[in-house]
Image (cartoon, rainbow, N blue to C red; front, top):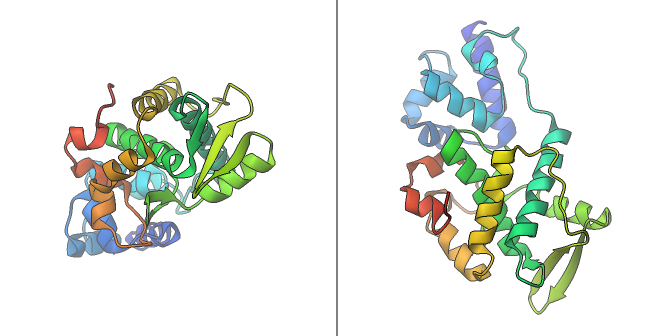
Length: 240
């Protein structure tokens, strides 16, 4: 693959995901000028940098390393969305209070932790969804739409309570067909660790992390930022 083809693939994928050059540079551990040279084909990627780009931009390693036919291989959007919904449902199952209910904000935080802790452990996100910095923390762009669709499908119930919105599962079990055993195990551990904590507790915890602190309001949050944290600031009280 030519340098120009590689340049086009990386640049187009970055723009499609909403990342700036500065954000990608920070996430893969290089300066912005160095990343600009990488994106323009003037500097080669290390294998570690290529893996990080592959995970963040959701393009194949073959594309990045120049082995493919010049066309970018983006992940299947439908399959990714269905997996993301299963992450939501299982986070609700394991992270809800004893009454089976959870606030919309707390649920969003559990899903965020599943994605970003998985990235911390495996250098790839669990869902690959794009997260942005919102007032209550990093939230995936599709989160609110996914909740609406799950409610319309009759999978979850929405219940207003004061200023909060609570969700609960209609069935006791949640689908797991798109989750690996290890992914499901991590979701369960995260949920149980936070199930008896308040919404404010988990919001404050995620606000102490670099993905929240470094990004500006409304900006895409790179997964790679979490790898620069100390383990205790990633896991909290979660026992892995």
